[in-house]
Picture 1 (tube, rainbow, N blue to C red):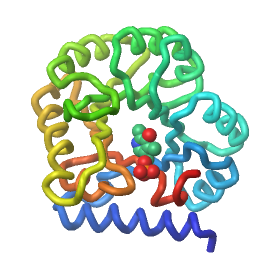
Picture 2 (cartoon, protein in one colour):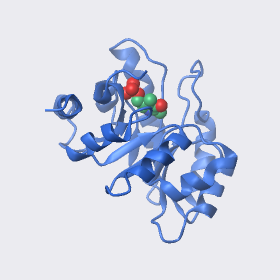
Picture 3 (tube, rainbow, N blue to C red):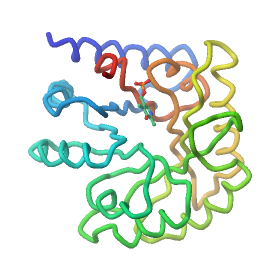
Length: 227
Ligand SMILES: *Cc1c(COP(=O)(O)O)cnc(C)c1O
């Protein structure tokens, strides 16, 4: 068996185990395979083993792989930093965008989303820890952006995403994920249920699942260390 397939099975088992351990329903957590820097052939191996959703950070690299893998019915998620002048290829080639933090970007994506495609599924990225070097909205700005993005016709606002700085296991690891879930619980409404919590990666997916992740973004544990 290919080593990627072995690792895919291990990651699926980690997810199932965490669902059981933390009282989450079976199959309530989706796996997003983060394939940045990996070759199209490696994605093919993973896809042949049943993986459908793939996440990419770098637009040019992603577009080449999307083109090369057109023959497969894959679901592409953009998880990198959006640039205002490069929203069109994102709107035209991806099913999901996880890192929205500016209304301007959301408006462009909505305008540029082709009518032949279903609405673009989006999450707002929140910076839970102010010390965090990675981007995201301040939690206090989130409510306002939720209502504005919720109005855009060609986007479907699915929930919140966070990318905390790596930290040791245990309570420290769970804290940012719990804060994101609590923020979601406060801001969800019948019109905008925010059913998605995109949080947890190779090193902390159990902590994220314990706190309610519905989608974990996993690269290294699937494909091995990045060069
Ligand atoms: C690279 C990346 C991941 C995957 O990280 P691993 O530690 O390799 O699992 C998840 N989310 C985002 C936004 C990333 O950039």
